[in-house]
Image (cartoon, rainbow, N blue to C red; front, top):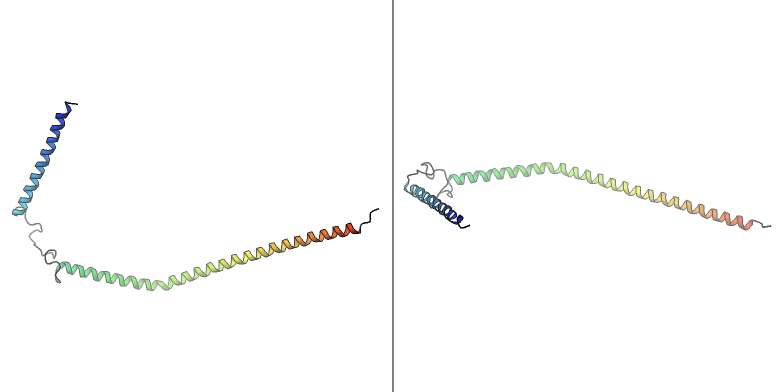
Length: 148
């Protein structure tokens, strides 16, 4: 383990030296920029692009772009509202047809259930009547039978 520590120390020193070198290069670049040796970042155009100290003035390029975007947004919103108003009657009719179709299906299901219940009740009533008639016939036969 002991022989590894000096190697790690040398590696650590190399990394630290590399970082110091990078910091020095960055400082040198910053100094060159401040002296003007790197040229203008806007290509010598200054603030003529409309973005800069005067960008909030009413006649700046930034304000022109902002106004254009606002006008486009207003036009798109207006077109969207017009489209929605044009489509609304169509969707309302479709929703009305769906509602009527669902109500008709519900009525049909109710009628089927009612008819099924009445049919079942009628069958059970007929079965009950038949059982009562058979019981009465059996009782009548038994009471009229003469035992010898």
